[in-house]
Image (cartoon, rainbow, N blue to C red; front, side, top):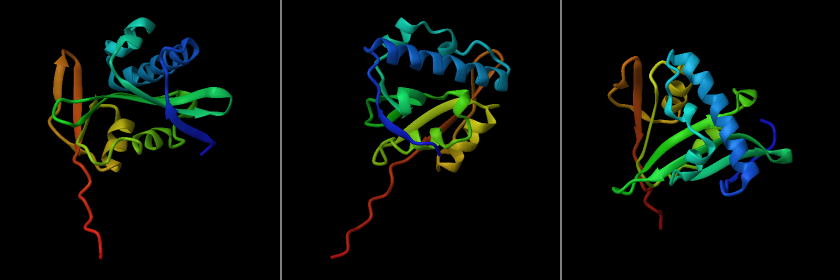
Length: 160
């Protein structure tokens, strides 16, 4: 994989926010084509709407501050983590960026995520990372979503 660093993203910084917005739109356009549904809310979200979301953002950043992908999540009331979006710039597909970002999710907390059920690359990623598929659901006509969850890693007893 090309040299990338995972670091927090500051969406109050205009160039960072613009880059994240661009990457998100490009990634969601690919997903829309894969699942046959172009009404993905984040695909139509304005830059200001994206910035207003109360999310924690991290990015896979290559040389010259190019954002190859990002992950955004929110903490849930029950102590878990809900992934709001995981996007990789199509120019960076199949280089391990999504896996690299997912590795930064807290291992000691439950994690939930949804994706288009027909988004085979995303479904395969979550299954490969040990997420369990839950019930599929249809939040809008023509949009079938797959839900996934991962429980916290069990604590390993220390050897004395």
